[in-house]
Structure formats: C-alpha cells, structure tokens
Image (cartoon, rainbow, N blue to C red; front, top):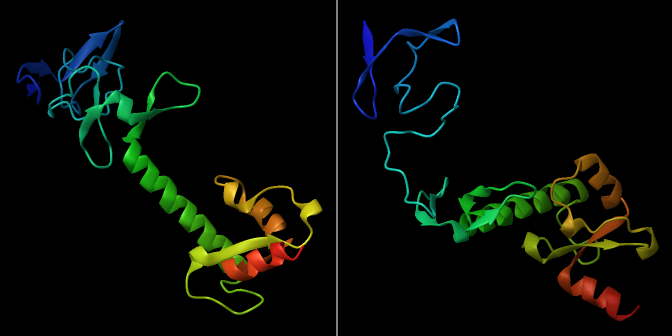
Length: 168
C-alpha cells in the first residue's frame, strides 16, 4: 500500500529505511522529494510559494517584498508579519498593557475623576527621583515588577498632568 503526495501527485510507501532505521511515513502528506525527511516543513506545500525576494504575511496573507518585513533581532530572518500588521499588533498590545495598568490603579483621574477615555489618562510619579522605569516604555516585563513601579504613581488625566508639571 502507498500514499499519494498532495503536492506533486507521486506515490510513496508507508514506510522506508533511512540511515538503517525503519521510518513510518503513514502520517505524511508529502513525498520525501517535496518534503525531505527531518526538514520540519510547517508550511502548506500545496499553496503557491511567493517568488524570491517576496514573502507572505502570516496575518493579512498578502505577498509583499521582504523589505516590507521587520528583521528579527539576532537572527538572519524577518518577523512573520508585514510591517503594517506588526505595527497594528504592537499598538493593540500597548493598549492592552495600559488597560491592565489602569485596571490595577483605577481607570480615573485621581484629581478630577475623569474616566471617559483611557488614552487621556497618564501615570504620574509622585517622586521623580524614585522612578526606575517609564511605564509607557515597558512591553514585556513581569507585571509584578510593573506593579511595584505603578505603586509609586497616581493616575492623572492629561489636563491635570500638564498642570502638575507646569507649576513645578
């Protein structure tokens, strides 16, 4: 009995001996020519592959030039999402993080009680000399450490925060 490759249509056996060991191929969808043994192909090989110098975004699925993808730090590779999708992802992550911080501190101005728009609320350090990190710059830190920094802050609306710094 044999299987049929979903990419090229060729037939391949259910098992084969590789490096002196019998290997079970019954769960494979592609032959060894289309997906070599041990190559860990995670892409759907039945889909058309983008031409050289292009890549498909994992979120919007558009085929774009590689220059439209941010490079990964420390690797010779790019992020899986195009720049516009990555910017949207980062924006939503920052908004979610700020909401977590506001849920912890209270989502209203401690001076005037404003609570309509979370984007208009700021974290004000009561003692600037005790500031260890800026809340708006934190993205992937342990939230317990962020809570320690939030305990040094009060929530002020943008107007009250500007007044606070204007009269310093």
